[in-house]
Amino acid sequence: MKLTTNMLHARCDESYPGGDPDAAPIYVVAGLIGTPGQWREFDTMWREDMKALGVEADGLHTSKCAVGAKPYKHLSSTQRYEIQYRMILDIAAARLYGCAAVSDQKYYDPLRELFNTFLGTRNRRFNEPHVITTRQCINLMMVSTEDATDEPLQIVVDRNSAFGGRVEEWYKMDLVNPRLDEPDMMGSKYRSRLAVCHKAVAWTSSGCKRQTSSHTCHCGTPYTSVASASRHGNGKT
Image (tube, rainbow, N blue to C red; front, side, top):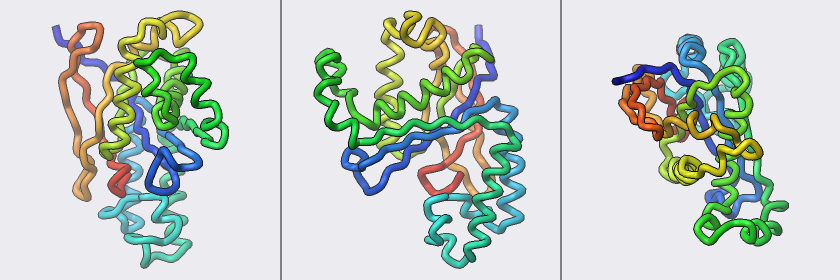
């Protein structure tokens, strides 16, 4: 039997200064979560705004837009502000919910070895700020929605292979850990809601490709999911 389910969708991305997440003084993972209907509403509004603002080919890469780097170099500060402002308005109008987790390395680094003493040899490799922060962001999404729904959460992440790999690390670890089902941990619904975790397909100037795929949940139930994909790590959102 094939079951089609409308699951919650979350888009997540990482941010850190410099080129090495392990050497960065701060590491952030943030994302937005919503129903398929909310994401469709956002998609419609943002397409209209991109067309009106003349950025259909570029979308919004906030770190570049804020400082006037390419491809926004020819735009005035007022125009660049308007692009960012419209994105915020569309997120709010679509009622998407934001979550973020931050790791301040100044406080984490002195405690790394202490944390290791509570972990088995097998799990010490997960005692890394990028893994912990990603996990905390997704956990916050779970906790924030558990009273309203028990629908599974589909996680769509940046196509960047490094970030995708970090997400996969914690995802596989949590999926096989029955200890998380206990009431003093994440609770009985947590692992059943970790249904899908995959990387996004490209968002092109001609449209956001839709990805339809069949999966088998870890509980053994086959289902089909449909997700609009974003491309945060390649300059468009």
